[in-house]
Amino acid sequence: MTLDDLDRALLLALLERPRVGLREHARTLGVARGTVQARFERLQEAGVITGFAPRIAPEALGYGVLAFVTLHIAQGRLDAVAGHLASIPEVTEAHSITGDGDLWVRVVARDNAHLEQVIQGVLASPGVERTQSEISLTERVPARVLPLVRSLPRSDRR
Image (spheres, rainbow, N blue to C red):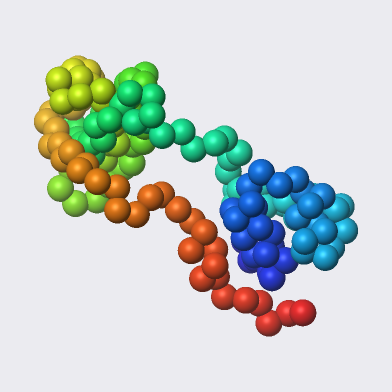
C-alpha cells in the first residue's frame, strides 16, 4: 500500500495521541471528519492499522521474568507446535525464524521456577525437540513504530 502525506500524518497523530477521537484528529489535520474516517478505515482494511488494545505490562500483573526461547522442531510439526503454543497463556509471541532454530517464542513468567514450568509446557508439545532460552535483563528499547512512521518518506504530491 502506498501512503500519502495525509495517511502518514494520520498515523503519526494516532500514535502520538492514541486516546483522541477521529473528530479531533480531523480538526488538528485540517481536513473533514469524513475524510479522516475514510482514511482510517482504508488503513485498517489494508492491514496498516492492526489493533486498538492498550499495551499491558506483564510485570505489572506479576510476570516479572521475560525470556526468549528458540525452539527446534521436528520436520512437518511447525503448525501443530504453534497451535500448542497458542494454548499457553505465558506465550506472548511466536515467530517462524531462519538460522539456528525453527521458532522464536517470547514468554513471561512470575519467577525463574515458573519459567521452568512454562518451558516444560512448551517442551510437552509433540514435535519440539529442544529449546534454548535467554532471559531478558532490561528492556532497552520498547516495542515501537512511531520512529518508523516518522521516517517514512513524504510524497511528492500536494
